[in-house]
Length: 280
Image (cartoon, rainbow, N blue to C red; front, top):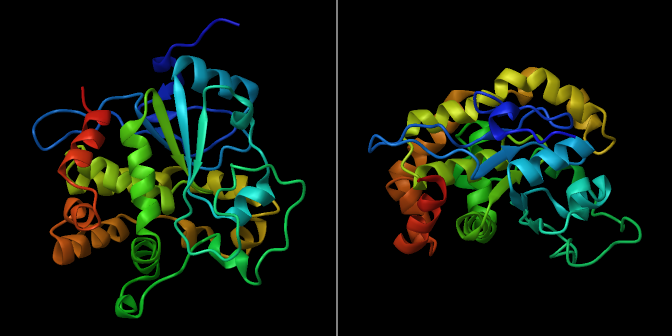
């Protein structure tokens, strides 16, 4: 088969793959100093379980994918099973759930599971995570969820960013839908690259363009079908004001996303390394 150039895979920043509906490049975004983020460094995506053989070839050979950063819960990973990229030599998978989890599966990729273990009661509620803190109860539900990630699993937010910063080749960050958990990690990544807030908001909101196809895809999986079916598509649709409010809160409490990173031990040196990953 003839090799496909990276440009042939794209419609703007979207990547056209057979097995995903919400894969896009964090390249091509303007920065506050007049630059532009580079294509082919960091991708954001929905679940990668249904990638075709051609998708895998394109990602690995044409886009030089080397790191997969999986933000799903342990239950999601085990129930969905091994995706096709797991079999590819040279592609490293890292698992950083953004939710508090019970059980002992702290590194789901470190061992092979013969069967899905007994899962905690109510584990499915973490598929569209709603953990929050009492102080944030006045905020909209999605904003509360995102603040919950930062409150409950700051170490995994940082671990995901460190994996991106230290990578060689392209990295893809994903969860189930590629909008909530992935959206928060993408926000910090773009902020470190110098992308202004409104461009970060616009990137987050792009998932709304594919939400019908995305929900339809997730309804095909027994893992996600119930949650996708019992809520209207509008509930799953990301809104610009959600990310705008998250950025406002980070500004009020921490001086912005970079201030939050600094306060949690991701200092100037690591921020510069993350910035360099997206800048030429």
